[in-house]
Length: 199
Image 1 (tube, rainbow, N blue to C red):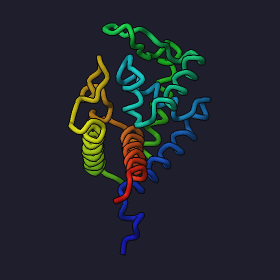
Image 2 (image 1 turned 90 degrees about the vertical axis):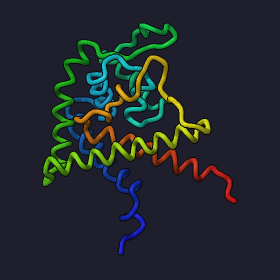
Image 3 (image 1 turned 120 degrees about the horizontal axis):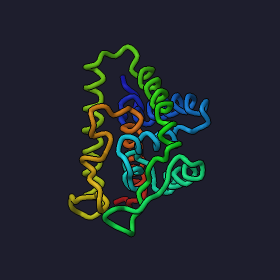
């Protein structure tokens, strides 16, 4: 008989996400960088110059925590903010030369975590898992858009395209992004449920 935890998608997403972050953090800290910061550099390498909203959406983290990481990365010389080419009110975050030099090291740690997580799985099983995670993420994003304004709408920031720029729309997405994003969706859903008045 399954316990509540064993049958809860949110529980397993959170547990696996924590294990992935712990494993990745152990590797990246050997090179003087927390996993959260390392993932931002990897996102920028894949997406190119990105807004705070693009980065936060991909990680599934709140803007303030991502902003702190970006500020720290900028202070350390890994990233810089540049004007958006189509909107002067916006700033984009991009890699500096120093940041680009760090990317291959980060990718090595991400690959190591991915290989550890998928040990014993064949390629088709990994592909199937990623497909399921993507579908869950899309379902929850659609629900959040409806909850936010009463109807499904384009939640992308001006000048961005979620379908094209979100990393987990790609076939080569690491687990870290999907699980972090999904964990954020589940946490927000639980907070909304807790804040809703009971009948």
